[in-house]
Length: 395
Image (cartoon, rainbow, N blue to C red; front, side):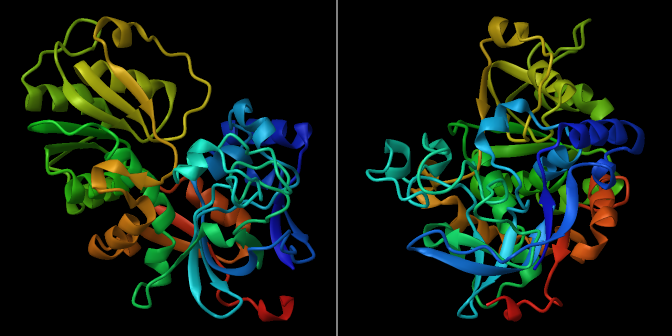
């Protein structure tokens, strides 16, 4: 079958890093990603099912891997060669559609008893990501044995599957996984009165965070969106931001709303109590710390890489920094699962409008380049489209 595969090659990763420096993230053409012809993956045990992708999104973490910029923290948590793709809407063998909850926790690995986190439904905190009867892999799309969405077929455990409602289009369903991540981030801060939230970044994750804040955080009365490109700014306003500013205007935008003033070093005297960084760079983290009020909270929603950041404001202003990884039962939403909430958000907020372009697997170089430059091209989410491929012959 046709699939895109990432192989373990230090030389290819090094070339990808150099290429991304020169080609603004389009280094996939030189890097470890290549088109291959694979045997369809076989279910590795009971409870596993084979699926056929319809749409599979290109995530920022995928781009970081293709460009050789992902953190070395993940090295023991992946197994090579692997097929990327974890934002997936797919057909099951019995003809139904499902989206995948990618984390490969204890249940998928046939580990008994479940670790305490998995037993509580928090697979994101599983301590057995390298154990069990499948190869290491923190998620589908990073595990040799499961395959991923950038292919014509992959396997997933039944515990990972969420049925797609009949009335929900594929174009909205492929946004459910990133929306679930965004919902988890938006609900992570403790409720308080009259909260101003700042959302740094307006790619797929940032826009979904804005939509989630507007829908479920009644205590958030003002949402300041920091968006670089015009189309992102339009979407941010449509999805619920009360004001939008370009990155260079971040401090002034927060100062105006919170009544703070800007100190000589660029930090604010006060700031916003709740800041969500949906970018994950050293500069975005520094910006987040600079505009968070004393005693406030920064949520790292965007996947960060290695960064040199001055954490003095965290200490002096007693700011808390919290990571937000994937999804699970949400205590502040009555214990409802992030994916259930994400299906609602995908429909009510019209998230299908964020899917800007689709490409067949054969045009993967073009697709990666388009996704890497999505903002300045006026795009948000880019995905691979396998709906026209002959997949049933793989059974």
